[in-house]
Image (cartoon, rainbow, N blue to C red; front, top):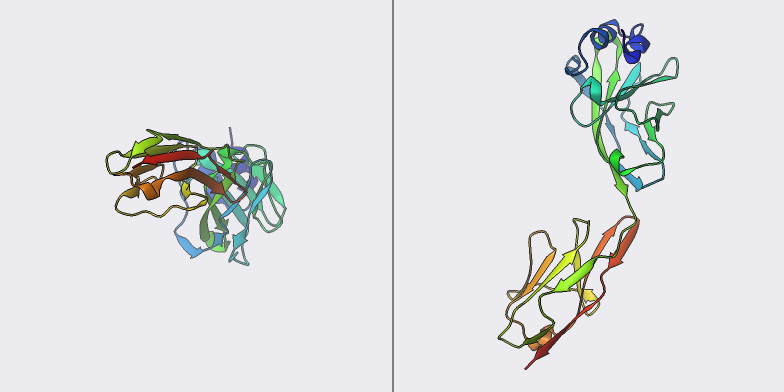
Length: 233
């Protein structure tokens, strides 16, 4: 039984059609050594909207484009193949059914989901069995939920106590606010490596005030409810 992709490409590049038809889908697809580099814009879009992975530096003599999800050029990672001469787009096993190709071979993904985020590879098939390859990424943004800020203590004594505050969210990037402005670190006020934990040791009277953590992405931002730190002296 022949894979649909192999059938579609058999007249275009016989060696590729043969390899796709004969070798098991778990094996890497052999591609001739790359002779040129192409690229496509790494891009991002909100969840539920459409995105296009646009090809740059497209070789003028391109015959077809093979799109993969992830960095392994395995048949199981093949999203689809677009043949320029016929305008035919054939889906691969990694297709979700929401992908298609534009007239220049760029990949369009409709109704984005979080599973679409990741690395993509495009291979241009050229005359005389030559190829060109490009790599890029797609980010899918979601509406953010309000982070939660919890402090180990909110009433402390100057020069005697320490405070630890933890910000809970599903975002990697975390920013801190003190009385509405950006928090400044010093030898007593420090953030953990992942920026989710704030430590003040020891606490001083100038540390009294409102603390918040903030998260953001290109389409939205959210701040925690303030934690009020009271310092006795």
